[in-house]
Image 1 (cartoon, helix red, strand yellow):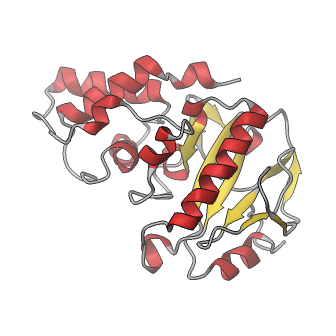
Image 2 (image 1 turned 135 degrees about the vertical axis):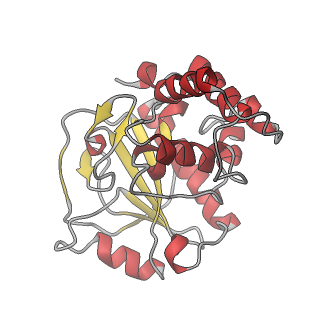
Length: 237
């Protein structure tokens, strides 16, 4: 049982079906209090199901059976309008604009507890636990390269490919390798309308120390492993 404080937001409406996806965000505001206020402001027209403070406190803003307004324009595995099928978790962090920093231990513990509870309750597949930047790569950077996705995967709460454990970048890709990487990223779930933005979002999760640069063999090996083991199209309801 996860302990949380009720902090209802008026910003929600009816779902079109049961949730089968979790989207992790950072708040990107200077304080948790400011973020909580905005997520509960009817005029702002944004919300999430939960907010997790840096000290580990969890607030529930919207019931999971209702649709919160957190994903915005988004796509994953060919699906659009991801508010319909997702549960949004905002993690308090000032983000890249206000002094991005590592996520404290107490906060990460609460992230793990909450995600584990939702997975158990909803039967959500691990490949359907994603970041905001994964589903909106041209608009969003969160939860960012300091978020510990490997830790979540070690707790069986997300995915982590073995190829991501190797830091050797490898050679630059030739045109055939580039095309193969594009197909693999699409199979992973990424919308490739902007290839560079999607590649950077992919690297934020799986190669966080190498956000920039041309596609290399390490990108291809990671993407091919994910595409083979966790194709996004098989995770959709």
